[in-house]
Image 1: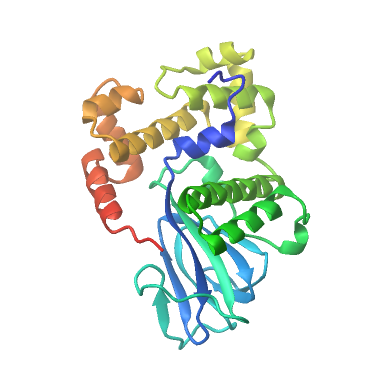
Image 2 (image 1 turned 180 degrees about the horizontal axis):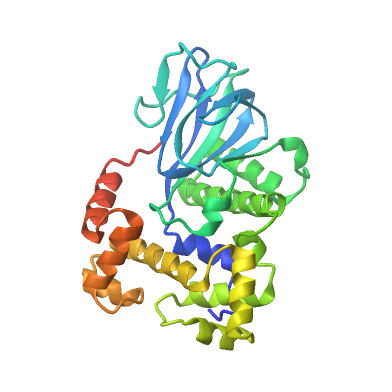
Length: 314
């Protein structure tokens, strides 16, 4: 894809190597807390019936979510859903570990939930800038708007479970998630600097697209400046003002994210991964990887394989 036409958000989602881990509809139990062990994931809840309370670390008080409300968890953490505002003292039912919680009953509360696994640090600036929790209430959405309509399709598909339902459900959940990210970008762009601000500057946006489209290329500040039509000094100043970082520091993050994706999804050797993401040899790659990620590439691959083996579904 030409960088002139690169959809930065779509490419970012692809480059992040996100894996959909969970998808299902659940009844929130009357006298228990529904536990979501999502320490390494972005979580998504859509309330399709009733009222539930969301409990998570860092919240001053539980969020009350009603029919049609949506909540996105940007910081992976264990959290709970309950019918009432209190969670203390309630028995816990863990999603994906305690079996089917049973069909929805009249008057009960139901949620559709999904989770998208992300890699370890270093995270792309977009994920770091997201609010820990983003809640979009049903009355904030146009009833015939695309997000409300997609949620309706998702709910209907879960209810009917016709042929091809899994493919349709996965696609619809991805659409809901992407619409929510758009809303988050529009409502919570950083006031001073960050990725959401940077993409609004045409030259900085093009520099981001060039690096994101080809992170293995031997980019320098001079070559980037030439491509975007600025002097080295002007690009460095505008990039730092917009992103709060330097172009080459951002390039290093993109390369390590690409490396994590290759280590997880391929059997390429360390030498092959190093060359694919712009490092001259496996030694320099492994050194940079261990410094930023906290694990060697081999350790990261072993941990990722263990995570996949323990992945739970609902």
